[in-house]
Structure formats: structure tokens, C-alpha cells
Length: 292
Ligand code: PLP
Image 1 (cartoon, rainbow, N blue to C red):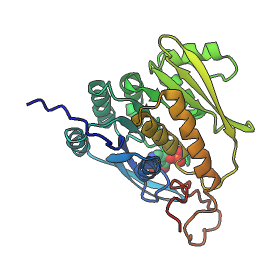
Image 2 (image 1 turned 30 degrees about the horizontal axis):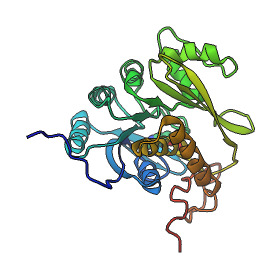
Image 3 (image 1 turned 180 degrees about the horizontal axis):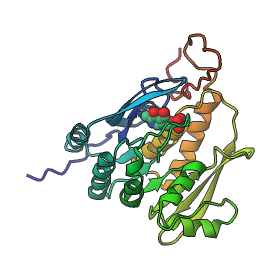
């Protein structure tokens, strides 16, 4: 008998999430699940690393062994017919290779790759020896790459020959971005100094490159941990619903804006912060859907 799935009517759009576990709930798998659920999707997860962290920073990252990682992936993939794939933190070269092969096999499913190489607090999350394999094997197999300005420059310096990203000359940018061999790239300007948070979608980079700009007000928010995970998961669930890339990104950005706008007012009770420490909690993923 054919093992292909028979689509059921009114099924929930489903996203396979491959990422690290941040027990504090701000980033990684928990952030991804909350985002996908808040946007009407179903999430299943593959854990790449158990990180030990709280809102004050990452204490350690403990990669999941390649066999266990692969077993999670295969077991879910033989059961659920996913509508989209979201990839966040990967920890090891073996994991990069497993995911690259998986994306090749599942090329018909839209995938969003958030290139989390280093945490915002500066801790390396993907082992350095896996960087070139990340660029060479993973990037060409993702539908959409979602780097911030820092990440795009890191990726471009890893590509051969290296290039750097310059916001002012779009055509030169496309030539540089083509070296990454990804189909579509959303460069997030959230870390630049401008008054607007502007993201640029370079679509169809390899054949008919076009550039689309997405603007949102720049918000001054303390609790902004996991913003990249949240945006990428929101895009993935929108793609799972069948939206095109531009609609999916637009809706994801407005969801993230709301989650950021309400973040500082929706935090748990914290212990007193030790002197000299800073805290970055979770954005408000559920947008108070469940408050009474
Ligand atoms: N994913 C996981 C599992 C993480 O632990 C982190 C950072 O600690 C991230 C993603 C990236 O999140 P951020 O960019 O807010 O540091």
C-alpha cells in the first residue's frame, strides 16, 4: 500500500521545528511552539541541544547525540505529513548534515532557516568546525534564510569567495547574497541603529532577484529574547497555511510587533537581579489570548 498520507479535511497546518531547548521559554523550541500555536498551527519538535539558561544568559549548551537527534526526526517524519519546517539552533556538524539531507528529501515542503550561530549574549551555539558545512550544505536547501545583519556578514565571510553586506547598494547585495545559494533571504535590520525596524526580502535570489522592504516601528523593549526564533516560526506557520512568502512575512512581522509591544508588561515575577546583571525575558508570544 502507498504510504503517502491521505490529507484530512480541516487539518491543522503543521510545522516541524528543529531547534535548541531554552528552558526559560524565551527562545528555541518553547518560543517556537508558543508562536506556532498562537498563530493557529500545530508544532512538533526535534531537539538539537539542551541549553542551560535563564533570562540572564546561557550557562551551557549540551548537544543531543547524532543518533538520538536523527531518531527524533525520522520518527516524526514517518508519522506526520508536515506543511512547513522551521530550523533554529543546530549544535554539531553531524546535525547540520542530517538536516541538510532531510531538507533535500523534503524539498517540496517550505522551510525557514534561522541561522543561529551565536546567542545574543555572545555564546557560540553551533560548533565552529560545522560553519562551512552549514553554508555549503544547509543554505542551498532552505526555502528562506532569515539572518540579521550580523549573521549575514558572518555567513558571507564563510562563503567562498567571501563578501560583505552593504545596505546601500542593493544590486551589489544580490551578487553577494547569491554566493549563499539560498533561494530567498530575509535580512533583518532589527539590530541596526535606524528609527524603523526594516527587513529586506531578497526573493528568488538565484534566478529573478527582487527586493521587498518590510517596515515596522523600532521598539525599545527590555524583554526581547528569542525575537529571531519567533519571527522565523511565525513565517513558517504562515507558509504552512499556504500563504505566499510576502504575505507570510508581513503577517509574521505584525505578530512579532504585538508580541514585543506587550512583552515588558507581561513577565513572570523575577528574583532580585544580582548587581551588574541584565535580564532579557521572553516576548509575549500568546498575546494574552488566555487571560480572563
Ligand atoms: N535558540 C536557542 C535554543 C537559544 O538558546 C538561543 C539563545 O540563547 C537562541 C536560539 C537565540 O536567541 P537570541 O537571539 O535571543 O539570543
